[in-house]
Each structure stands twice: as structure tokens, then as C-alpha cells.
Image 1 (cartoon, rainbow, N blue to C red):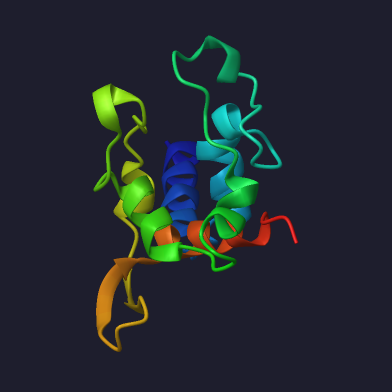
Image 2: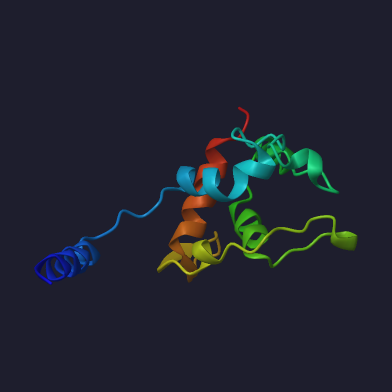
Length: 131
């Protein structure tokens, strides 16, 4: 009985310790790299099994006139944008979307509540851009 009480107390105390939030790089590794590859080139281990090849994320800025389209990237991850005939289907990223909200200005001067991990993931994808 004493061991059980000690075990329960240890679990209770462990729950009180703040957990570190995943970084954008960690979320990319967990949610994106299996399709897009570790470097974001669309060459992940699952890419060959997909009907449509995953996008090469390293050229997003180049394809957008030299500016990283962060809002469009976040909208794509969130699921607001789709492709024609299902060509751009993305899985559900619930843990990213259920994170605490932070104010994010997409460039229009309006701070919109946005899931923190979604912003961090988009910022990480921005670091993958070819220079």
C-alpha cells in the first residue's frame, strides 16, 4: 500500500512539472518529414507511397517572388487551402492546432489569435528555404 501511495504521489508531482513545448523543428520532424523529408525537399520515406508527390518546401520563397508566404503555409497546414481533385491533401494536425493562441500579424496590421505551434512550424519551414 505504501508503494502504491508513493507511486501515485510521484505521478501527481510529475504532472505538476511544466512540460517543454516542442519547437518548430521538432514538430516538422514529427508531422512533416515522413512525407516532405528531413530537409523539406518532398523526398520523405512515405513520399513514394503517396498518389501525389509532396511539395518541395525549400523553394516556397523563390516561387513567391523571393518572399516567404508564411500565411499561405499556415493556411495549408491548418487545412484552409485544398488542391484540385484532392491533389494537395494534408493530414489533420490536431496537436499543432490545439496549442495556445498567440497574436500573429500576417502583414495587414491586425493581430489574429493563431496557434503557437502553427506559427513556430511555419517559421521553421522558412529556415528551409534555398538562398
